[in-house]
Image: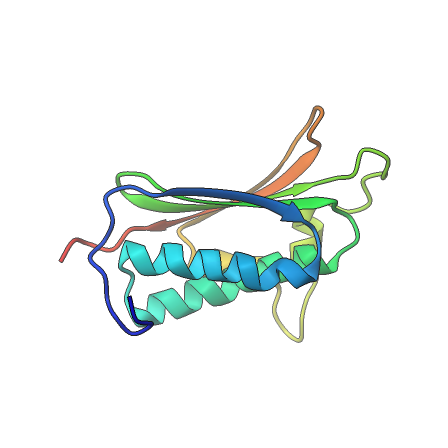
Length: 147
């Protein structure tokens, strides 16, 4: 499939990857997100905006020293695309900042969290307690209508 080639929307998608929380893995996570968004059939403007805000959020997480691993889940339901960013704390590190605080820090005149809320249908932030000690940012966007 060429980069400009439009694919019909997929009926189901579920991709899940967990990598060390290092900025060198940003291209891998970006490419995975690009492929998932492309296969769901969003138009070019929606696609570009979704990828831009997701990349900014993931970059903010990868640039921080608060997390040991980052997970990215891309899935579809009957009506939505789900993007879940999970940030795993190291067992020996005291939790210094939540993902909400991290995404609320301004770059120039906007915050990654503010942009996510403008572009995505829903934005849910939280923390999973227990062994994993993972913060998460769950995003949804209505799937495009079938052609």
